[in-house]
Length: 424
Image: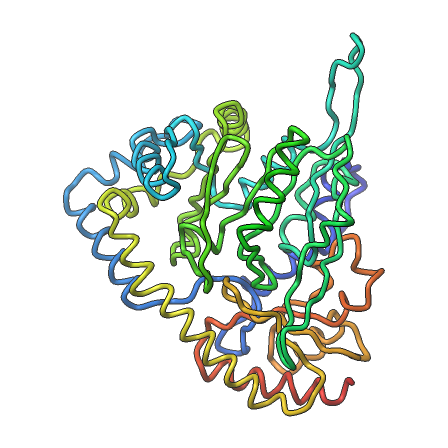
């Protein structure tokens, strides 16, 4: 029975059928034994990684103080100080520049980080202009779409995005690559920050050092931050298949997450930023969460302090995903034949980004058709934001997770190709 209650504009962000809601519903409600689950971004089960963290947890619990230290108290709103000190030492070594614990704020995962950051740098601003206070609305600029499905719906105010279509660069008869169209990008006074994911979710696109430095200069020249989402990149889980030189200073805001190393359930991520931003994020944590989760810190602190996490990433996590990527690409090439189906260059992340030229239906409709065949994909429209209804390319792309069992990707791809043959 429906109520007659009225709901605020705030609630409208959560009652619509957003892309991230559909994605998480699929992950949570569908039985993976009944479907070929090629949607979602859940990290794969890597046996040696699971064993490693299981042993650490057992050791911590056997020491007798795990619950008292991590579970029977709140941390500070900025995050457990001793853990931030470990992270500060780790990031100082990684970025080869001094990073203080004051620059680090822990959050309940990357999504929580973006929710705070994007609303800190967008929406209504009261600024002093010509000696008088004036209200101005600011927005977050994404230099190319497609971009992450979870960004679009986290703004507390409407019309807080500025996006630009990526240029499509063919690489060969199968692969293409998205490039930023720098000639079209304009940083106007209503831009509060520039943001992007690297590697990109969904496409696996990796911006090269020159592109990142150009965005950095644009941000610096306009006195706004550059926000870089590293959920699939540096330094955890570092699933990047090309060399790059990450750098940090106080004009850059980095987000990081421990989900993709195989620990999504601990909901632990964080932000590296100027101390002013850290203070605001700490206040946000206190009001929205009281404090960030501490449950996973005991599992992580020793591996960060002794740098065992680097060996785990180098020897287990990156080779695992590279092997899975190569298997998926071989299967894809075998099934493709001469169909007008293309792949974005897999520079990193866990995904294949598929482009079907001439697809007669949208990938939202393709998603529903494939769901009947027990195959789950993520339709591409959700990743194109303001261009989802204005660019044919946006209705012709979809995302696949390649980090699944070989029999799942093999059977799933066969069904997908059979369906696509009838739709072009």
